[in-house]
Image (cartoon, rainbow, N blue to C red; front, side, top):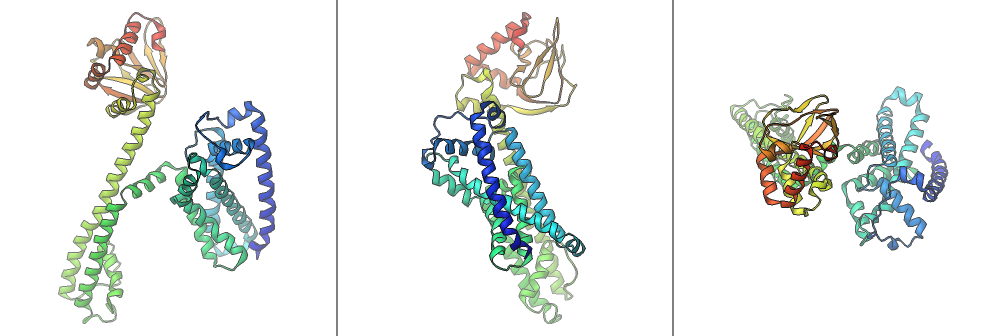
Amino acid sequence: MALRRGLSTIQYTCNGLMEMIDERYLSLLYYPSIQGRLFPMQTDSKVDTSFSGCSPTRASLRQEVHHVIGSMAEPSAARYLTSAGLTTTIGAAVLQAILVTVPDVLRSHREILTIVQIVTFAVFTLEYIVRLWVAPLDSPATPHKGLRAYGLSFLGMVDLMVIVPFWFALVSSIPDSVLIIASLFSLFKLARYVRGLSIFVSVFRNESQSLLASLVVLIVLLILASGLVFLAESPAQPKIFASIPHTLWWGIVTIATVGYGDMAPCTPLGRFLGGIFILLGIAVFAVPAGILAAGFAKELQKRDFVVTYKTVMRMPLFSGLDAYDIAEISRLLTTQIIPANTVIVRKGDQAQAMFFVMEGDVQVEVEPRPIRLTAGQYFGEIALLKDIERTATVTSISEVRLLVLDGKDFRNLLENHPSVRESVTRVAESRLTGDPSAMR
């Protein structure tokens, strides 16, 4: 009843919220200084918003919202605030679902828990509507494909599954357990904001065929083990091993090497078969574990490569290279994280590699005063180019993420790309002559 009484409150709140959002966003369109800080504009002339049939203001509003909540949204203050708000809502929904199962808490705080439930599901509903609204912008040329892609995606279906039970509960009676499950399912939404969960989903999707094959083998082994042990044990223990479906429980806990002990073979043949299937279970369970481990390593490597590729592409040194060459260079680079106040290279040491600053700042100890290098700049090329010892000591000012290019790969790079060799040589000569601008 409390849920039904909240319907009018939800409708009033949602209407007011939509009016407020329209006013706030429309005002931002007229104040570029505020708009630039909260919503970084993407000036892509290829994006066509005419498909929506909206007025220019509405189309611009949709683009602004897409920049904040879209799947390819760029980092911004508004995006961080939105992510924080939705993450908090997910936490509140899950906490409410947990607390309603505690009788004492439910009796003393029923109204508060009901309000939290109404608010969280209202926010999830608004989020789903907004994501449907901006989904066509993911594919401007064919808007229906963008909408379908979101609707049929894993997270799109999760968004829908979370809110549907709540709205059914407003018009008909459904068990409270369904609403609890819906709230718990909202945890999957964290995949948008927690990198580890998104990697987990990607690995399962990429390795689905291999995992399915291992699952089939596991099911075959389970049925075979349950059937054979039933035949061996049912004459001696007819109540415990009453049928093959009853014996499936024994097969599951045995193959999984859990062994609760509530069902155990007592005949010599049954125990022999049980030992065999325990050993086979260890081997079978190791297969999906290996598949997932390899999948995680592959996915992390792929994501690191994408980050490295984008970093290399933005470096002025490689601005004249095509995508294939940049990809080849990216594969040669390895990532290295250096703590703050750590010597990276020391003057007089033998040169083994060249370094590109990906994140953080480093300090080059040169006369008359040290030089600071930031993201996108590089060092260590002089010693490799001249085949001499290090000419300066370089220390990390803050924690630094570096891309390391091995000396052999460095020489091959210069040999294969004359433009890169010319640029590196020019900067190296300037640095040797003490030109401070070459360091910057």
